[in-house]
Length: 98
Ligand code: FES
Image 1 (cartoon, rainbow, N blue to C red):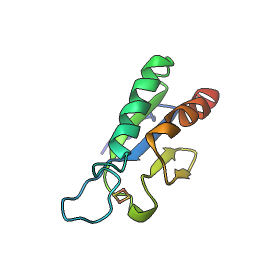
Image 2 (cartoon, rainbow, N blue to C red):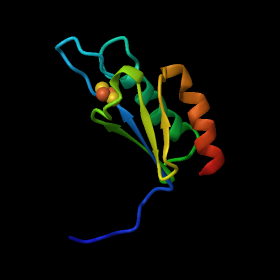
Image 3 (cartoon, protein in one colour):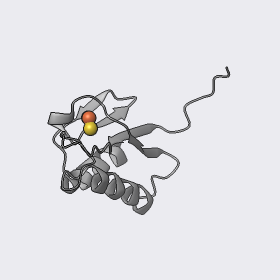
Image 4 (cartoon, protein in one colour):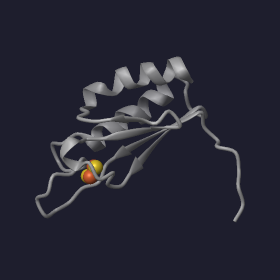
């Protein structure tokens, strides 16, 4: 195992997990997790945050009923009940801290 410096100032893990069995999931159609993730990725490019902020899809973060969820590393911020409309506010906060 090798260790390396964290390559981004912040990483936003956005749950896009989907389930076909009817259980609530951030990435299920109509929930908005996937759309939020894509809006954040596009915003990072648009705002010139690429290389500073990384938006990554995550699997289930185990708070499915409170989702869509995202987790900001290393801030330790857990964001719940998100919609794609929250992307701009999240990006503004990331840009201030980037
Ligand atoms: S599906 Fe997103 S937290 Fe479980």
